[in-house]
Image 1 (cartoon, rainbow, N blue to C red):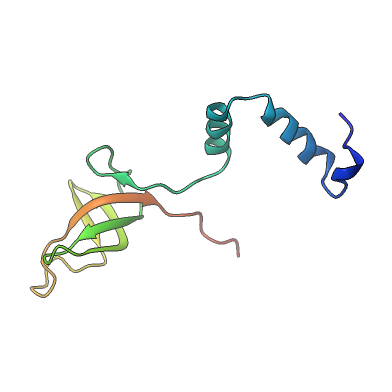
Image 2 (tube, rainbow, N blue to C red):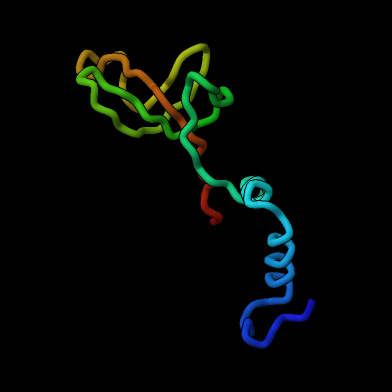
Length: 107
């Protein structure tokens, strides 16, 4: 299809992609977007654990019941985080959720 004149400024490729997406249901469109674009989402540790040796963002609960984000890695059956679990000032934390880190910047 040729781009209508009122849509000047977008490429033919962008227009064709938009027309193609309109042929799908909302559920199908979201599945396509998730496959082609990474949308970070929190994942419960009860549902799934990350690959071992993969750094991820984690959501943890401290000894006072407060929640904080940090980075961590699941390995050898436990979590390794930048919160020092061996220091008496930082008792073990409870990781509740995690998500993948975005790809690193291109240098």
